[in-house]
Length: 327
Image (cartoon, rainbow, N blue to C red; front, side, top):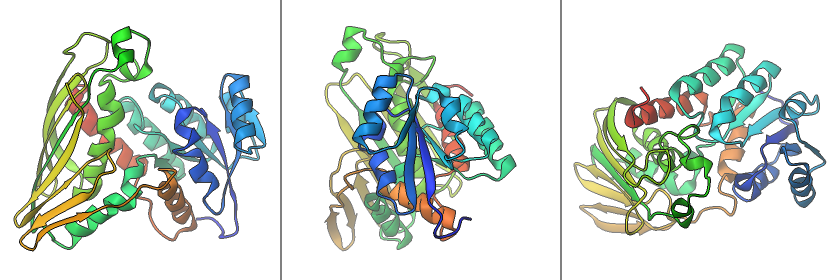
């Protein structure tokens, strides 16, 4: 727990695209947070980012940022294959940390990161920000108020067309099996599965089939899965990244109704039950991680518990590994 007047000075390790609008400004807009420094290996890009975002310092070496005595917390926004490397260094330095999702490319590395912070009792957050978005809090409210009765089953289908980059053969770390075994599944499905765990509780059993149908890159491009939550709610999912059209549809089936929504599209949430059909539109904030950052501050003040921690992030990694076949 920190003092209410304490300003947490953050350092961003890897100030790439995700930090431009999604996360960086969210930290800057959170009372009690300040981005003190950023790091990127390319000095020109690091300097440019710092200048554009009004940040005082920049580094080209991760160790220099992590060990800066004027930095209280580190946000790791590098590709997943470096999360363990940097995460363990941050834990060793004894600093608060938030790591981009997924926590690591596999469960074993995720567990190692979680245990390193837990051993020192240092707060570790994971940027599964959908857990804090008002859009999905509305769904949680419907579930808490039994608006569809007892929840029986959840079903998600996500498909996307093959991208121009995929067809060109141009390198993309998101489809490099050495970094992301599941390809786009790791990057995208992790968001939805983590959200479902938040809404419906931990998953106790899961199995899946994954493969590469297109042969365009080394990672997987298709997967299907079935699972059961500890509560007994069943679930199924299918993800394919070489289909004719994009589709993102989740259905939660209950004994007295159904909730339909999209994980990624900012479309209306639909509640169907005995009272009829209700559509609710909840707009995303300009900076999508705003509520995630604000709730980290509340957690550090001791006012509430953040819903996305190292423990929850590791559980999501376990589910992902079971589907892809890494476990």
